[in-house]
Image (cartoon, rainbow, N blue to C red; front, side):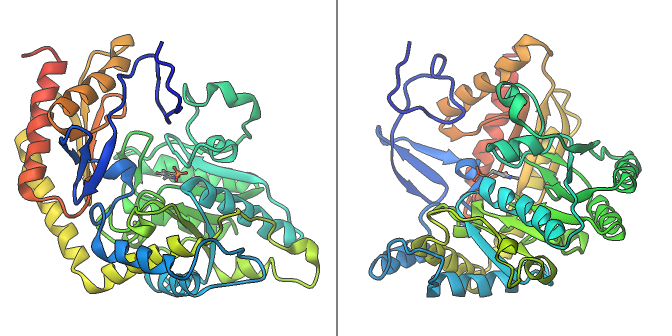
Length: 421
Ligand SMILES: *Cc1c(COP(=O)(O)O)cnc(C)c1O
């Protein structure tokens, strides 16, 4: 048995080979202990946006360490957190007015759920139901697991998870069914919030749906006085082609969660933004109406400085042009798979591309993912299929040549795994 001292995340230590150490990172690459350059085609679990070690962000981190380490964020504030809050309010959909900091995507969603319930509680009209979408993923804490898709990943913890109402995924042509379900849940009453990943359900298999559905859901929520929580932890910072995915639906959610790309992926940080109404419901001379939430590392100044630098990059560099360019490269590369029987559901949302490998189902299916992952690694690529779903989500600095290599590898690896080579 492989008795690893470090217990790695989402890792079956009995089956995984010993891990290589990464000694440095650069642009779209990880460099391992043997000097191999591995193309990071999934942005190190979706966090790296511009590229690894962007000089502006690295410099901001160095500068921040001259002044700060961690500072308690009750009783005190600091400039990096304030500049960041102002900058965030400027770039998120108009109408979000307040910023609550935490340190991961999961905590940003936990904060959102607490804000939603606190809002109704403090107004003296309690609501406690949360509606989510089938195949959703919102994190790995008990609360966020409760709102995510149930399955092998959380079977052991099921007894602790709270109940939610689940909308059917809006498959193309069946969008109205999803909207009707939400309307029915709302009519039954007690719905505090709809928690949803806008446009792309990430960990649930890169499932993509139309912006019109999101706009429709927002309209229904509004009509019933329920809140919309947009979990933009993965979709934020340009991944879907706009800075935030909600923009494509022309909506402002009541609460927006952001993390992964917030610091360009350099340091852990999260923010939950909300409307004035939600903040106001917690403002009272009655201390019982306080928003009772904190993490020890709330608004770490060094992480905030990294996020301020990320905002500077968005302001001063042609990031959206880079994203447009990457979207075009994806489209060109995908042409080679048109009509290819090895793949189904070839899809793209901005910089994210996904294809389902048409593999025989059953026990074999479970092995397809790890087998492909191994094959990609042998070709110098970090690509981690979700079961039979192969996806690419590279940092925006990736070149045409590097991306081409990823597509060549998908072509080859699919054939090998399907036993056609
Ligand atoms: C990754 C992710 C999370 C959880 O973020 P962590 O930083 O891993 O806790 C939540 N929601 C979505 C949509 C995510 O993709």
